[in-house]
Image (cartoon, rainbow, N blue to C red; front, side, top):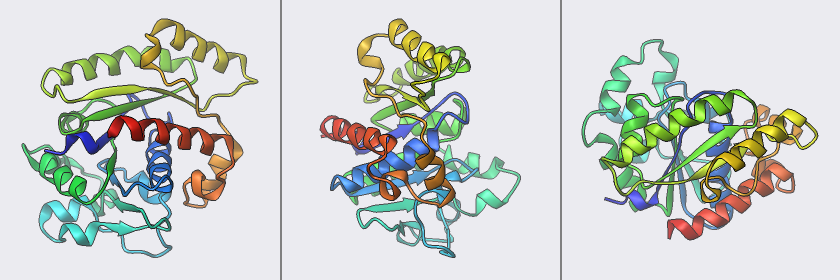
Length: 257
């Protein structure tokens, strides 16, 4: 198994910058010369809106791969960045009932085999997951070697952090190869006293090596890039949020080796 090349992005709740982190970290790896594959196992399929796919490009994905309708090479989609390819959730995003998708994804060995194949084609596989610690997320973590937890700098984050940390601890019992690389503080606002207090509290409450030193700031460029369907690290590479993701990619590149 190639779990050492698989990096899962997980969070206890939505709206904390999880997909934004997955998309931009994958793009940052690619910009740093790593062959990168971004995988979306969230049936909501948000990755397709920000990964830089061509307008009108067909978007088959994991749901078609699992049903046997498409081969793996057919769901590996090119992006505007040559070193970055994407595997979307697929047609499941158009359906209201996700039960079959969840059942297929969580069958024993399915994700292990998929991630192994993707890892053989790349230097790093970045996986965007649904919010929470449901069945899909647990299977992803059991098949991954690394995990990052984005944490929005707002009070509710303080309530959800212990839940995700306990869940990760439980999964490590079944996947001893899994390493929590750290909590990533996102949507940080220097001029916002509440944002600053949350960041300070998280850092004072957890071991220093459990929280990444650099926060990802909330900037207009991130919103604009998302609206344009592009990673901010490509659209506005000098933006402070882009620089934060590029620095994180540099740090993680050493750990992934």
